[in-house]
Length: 82
Image (cartoon, rainbow, N blue to C red; front, side, top):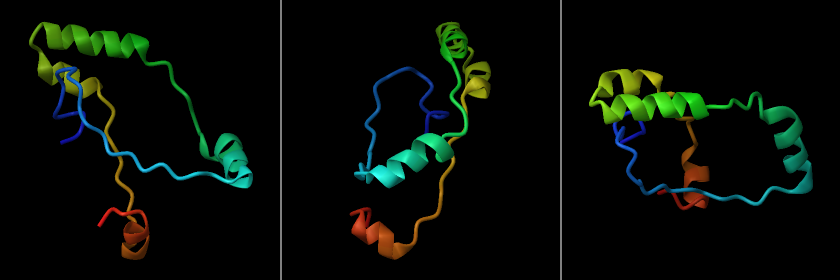
């Protein structure tokens, strides 16, 4: 269940895979892979207001969708995902 389905501001358990980045990869991450950083405080406040007023449909429309990226089976095994 993603954030769109859990639109009640309750704590949810997250599974995070942390992979140490070598300096080379960290530099790429900082300089190339981050495309945009967006301030979302005002949007989060609107979402909370809609939820407080029991208007979940409007709140859900403001929540960004999650993207799932394919991972090959071999990598999934190495990461302990399967």
